[in-house]
Length: 126
Image 1 (cartoon, rainbow, N blue to C red):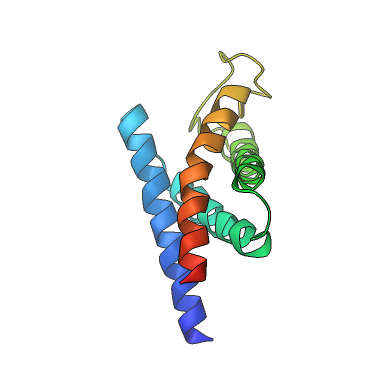
Image 2: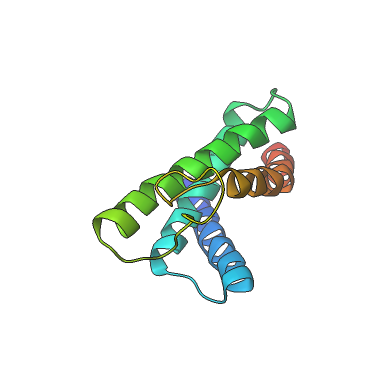
């Protein structure tokens, strides 16, 4: 039980640092809430990988992209719209929803999910 919690904690930390790192690389900064979002996203991807292990990787990646987009929408509605923290704003992007999510970033999440889920799939078999 403790070992499983430790594994989840490590996975959460990797997701938090990874998400924050991606934001720093591409935007030059991040926000502490994005670390929480990143940790939750990687835990969600691990759940997709383990629960849908017989589903093709591309379908898992689509599910992962939808999950990450849903997390972004949730965090965006709370942090940006309700609390007015202005963490990000996609309102200039095509197809955006309330300035919180847009098709381009959902597609980029899909592309990132492919290698992440491949790695998680391999790790799950080890």
